[in-house]
Image (cartoon, rainbow, N blue to C red; front, side, top):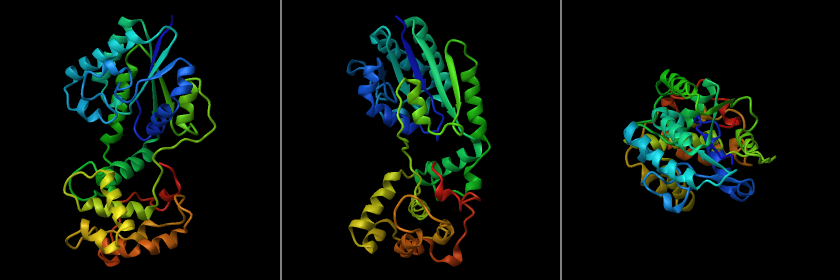
Length: 322
């Protein structure tokens, strides 16, 4: 009659998106093993248990706007109902990398719900070496999905000490509870965290699974340029629309749609390209030539290039995965 809840809590930039995608595409294999995937925000528990607006794949920000007490009570209410429906000798999996950030919300909810339902809880967490984490976080949330207003920040301004200290502070709270099993893994030691997590569920695959592939450096440069034109935070979809215009429409028309005034972003595309990249079969020099005119226009000339916003080892980021 053993029942268990496995909660994957992150941390960010450790393959969480690939884990979640694999869980969504492995529902049949999970079902055969008596495992139920409950989604990012418990939206897959049951259609009858969709009680709150945050219960969707994109609902994390809705829950984040709630205070700790209210959010915890709502999470517990959904968990209570979902655990009642969990069959004997079955397990449920919940995966969301933002969970680790709010221990005051999730720890009491998981702890109390599992105790009252007689369900064993296991918390699974991956942690990344801090230097590679900050660089990957900068590419993701500093450039690709700009999460702050204004132009793209220099790397030195984006990478604050509290980015690392906050992770250790949150994880310390997760380690201070004895009512569940905490399994903490070194991301850098695992060849593939997605494969590893699936193996914990009894599902073995040899396929290397990644979700957020590193983009070619000149593409990242163009993202930085386009996002710097936006006064408010900019989602990746903004650049995706721009890129579609560049490919589908005439380049000038595509550029004019996004840039009305001369832009001085202060970076040069040449500074972004060191060696080869893995995202296309075209040699990097040929790809740079194809893009050089929009890149030069956006940078307003090489004489104004200033690459202070990029990590110091920018030459090597082209050949590593995020």
